[in-house]
Amino acid sequence: MGYYDPSSWIASDDSIVVSIEAKLILKKSAWSAGRTTRGKSFLPKNSLELQVLIEDTGEELRLVEWQGDRQGKIYIDLNQNVDVYRSGHFRCSYHQNPNGCAIPPPHHIHFPTIKYRKLGYGQTSYAHPIMGDQDCNYILALQSFCDQINIFLDKVNIPLWSW
Amino acid sequence: MSYMDIEEIYLKILSDKTRGMSFQEAGDGLIVKLPFSNFMGEPIEVYIGSDKGHIILEDLGQTAGCLFSTNQYTETAEGHRLLKNIVNTHRVTMDYNRGVLRKELTEESNIAEFYDFAKILVAVNAVVPEFRHPRKALRRRPRLASRLVKDVEQLKLPMLVQKHAEIQGRKATWIVEFKYSIVGNGAASDIFVSCADLSLKKPIDEAAYVLAMAMDIQDIPSDNKQLRVVYNLNGGSPESLQASELISENQERFRYSAFNYSDINDRNRWTDITRQELALISEGRAPLL
Image (tube, rainbow over all chains, first blue to last red):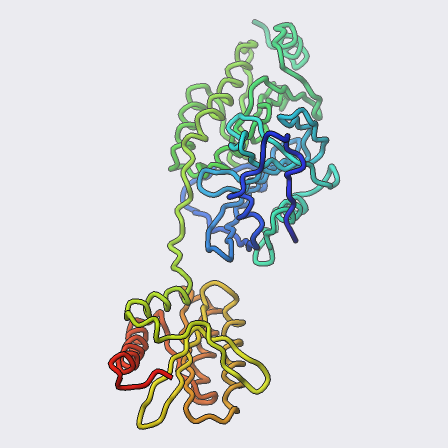
């Protein structure tokens, strides 16, 4: 468990968002989030929601993971309210960083910078690659995502259907 | 227009020469990558395949993923309701079991149906993230130690209290939250206040720490030493209840007083005792050692 500093992937005229990275460096623990069972829910395959607590500050983050149909791409987002701090894309194709650097498949994690702060919403952003097999499964993806940002998963009950 | 097969649709899309569109084989069908980004900044994809002799269009679960990521997946959420309205008007099915949007092409279908389906995906990916509302934050109380500091500060006597004081045991030196000294019945007495926050960390570990400290210091010969343990509960979880019982049951055995901060009567008891003792010091009736 640790923290991966993505600074080396950014162009020299840009930089990481210090206030966000400070939160990601701190030790965090995750546990399964309670989900409402009332009514119908339109959920993707293997959807998993975790609450993440920054132990030193008491702040709470939300981690969601889900898998696409057929191709089996896996997506993991870590956010706080409306701000996405990291967005992991597993079993995906190439990603082109704003500085022109191509991140090879199969996995990469998007991170915010001062110039490209908003992740998602149809906007481009920086990403760094992570090691792993093309056919990595749902659990391995979660573990390698959490390994990069110091999240401990020992309190998480992984649903059996996700194996 | 006659019924088209996949190849025909494929050729039709190709013949439109839409720039930025790309294709990829996927099993018996193909995946079309549209020149529009989804909410994650990746190309929106449409699967074209066949099922029981019908041509089907599917979204590969990206729309359900969008609702899930933005916390809009329940049927009462705005995003879910909006999606339902859109798919109803376009005769698209929401497959709740697989979490995909699906459209079956009829014999009268033409290439426009493919673009209509694509438009739904583009619209939902553009609009739903704007509905993103934060998950209701849990009402998390500050840590017990911070609350005790606040309580003592309210007594306006913080200078009389030593924070993070040390207490020497037989085998180790322990850190407690507060220490102050009073004179009662002609003898000076040291009061040590330790807190066991059973709400955040592993409650059993917290209780074990307190018991180990109490056990370790009780053998040190000193008549004028009092240990008080203030603990709280985490909404009655089995672990925190077990930990609180451990702290509460061993008071006499290890000679300390326990106060349950979650219980209003117990909390008032602790505050009253502290206030009275500190008032004695501030009025000069008891020396500050």
